Image (cartoon, rainbow over all chains, first blue to last red; front, side, top):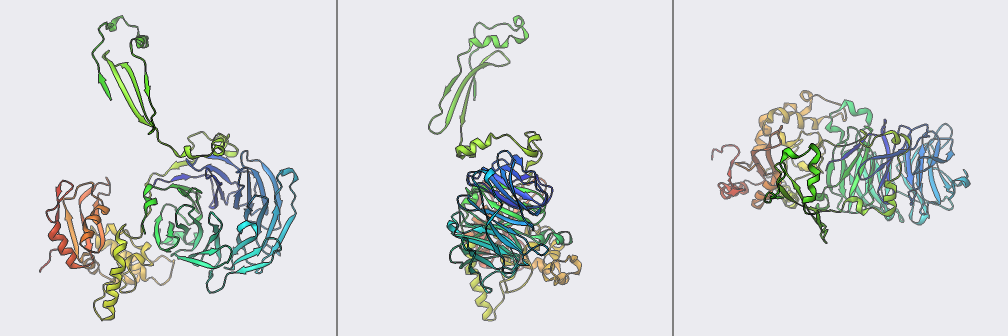
Length: 328
Length: 294
């Protein structure tokens, strides 16, 4: 395959997100402006100007009309996808790390980092249908048990009944989204040993994958919180995703950016590694980035995927026909 | 497809024509015909025009419309396609430099040669059993040189190794550097090849191991690639490595390659069977890569 290189960001990429139909790709980076691209040819459709800090995460509504972005400037903003106009801005007392729309786009879960005397927290906000009715009240606020450790990602569980969170304390937790009660948490022995950097749901939300700096990714059941599979690599995992089409998962990562110049290029392990979801065996690697991969996303049709790296590039890969015939 | 028909009888002499009179003659031509598209999307367009010599030429263009990715887009997605650019994107021209196709072809690199998987478990069992009986250690990692611990494909240091393809031509130079880093104790820090733990390992030792049960195949056609060679040779037994020499500059096959077998007997059988075998209109020459004394 011949990837399409998209250089819309000046700083390392942080997050990539396709809309439901898979025709738009949203990219967030440490520069302050999220971008939106056409996912087939990589043409840039627009930019969302307004943040004043690194943008860590984004999500797009089911109808592809509303974009939510969480930024280190201690704000979470809602945008009109089509025009790039800012609809609303939530203010927090610490940087926002992750955002996720619920089923139906009525609610959004937002995580904020520990900062000064603030501890890490999960907020649930109601998203008004009409942006002019939008208020900043939280429906629910959950204080993290290990308040000094960041929650890197929080997403909605099946039917919006739960919130799944993972972060620097290496524990995956499931919370009741109504009461904020802790329902389940991963066990020390089976769980990750080092901070969890990424969390991604399967297309039907029945299971999810977590990537960790302990050089592994784990597949969990969204309801029972049982560990299903473990994928072991030779690199810290910064990003992971589950193919919606085939039984594949993709992991990306690489050594810490601060070590890149001191080691051999090949030692960096900057490829996106494909694993068989069930057999846990490595299928192959896709090279290209000059730095660690920070973001990975499968197109909802499973026929292409994009990766965002510390090098500031988004690489959009359309799979060759061979990919679909790989036999294990 | 163009076929020249007989020149028209009432040919106009070029001297009598104005410079831009060319189009005026078009009324002499039969009308353009479009046939199709049929159920396979095949469309035929038949046109007539005059070529430079004033001869009437019939041009039949057969084209097939293939469904593009765009055809799969939903109505909403198509609508979004026509959205005006906004933000910084609105000042970009269409062929903006922001989006460029990669100049290099990226492949999904398999951890092992496609198709070689089936033999692996069997092979893995044998040497392990042999190990228990105190026999020779067959499981040697080609990357880090560790014996009996893991296969090359499972080597934790495999990414550090130079591409195996480069080995045959200049084994002593690249090989000493690659596996040496495996024994590096401080992880992540760069250690020059000469100072690495395994640096004293000589190139000849490595070369010997690489050449074990190695079969040289010459007079290959330019189209033959590694998978083809693997396909050809795997019938004789477990193949541990296939390599086709490719010109670095032109990417054209240099017409020879190497196949390493796990078992010597398999290699021998392959040589007996395939030496002189007609493959892709060429007669293969298959022999031991290193002249054997026996």
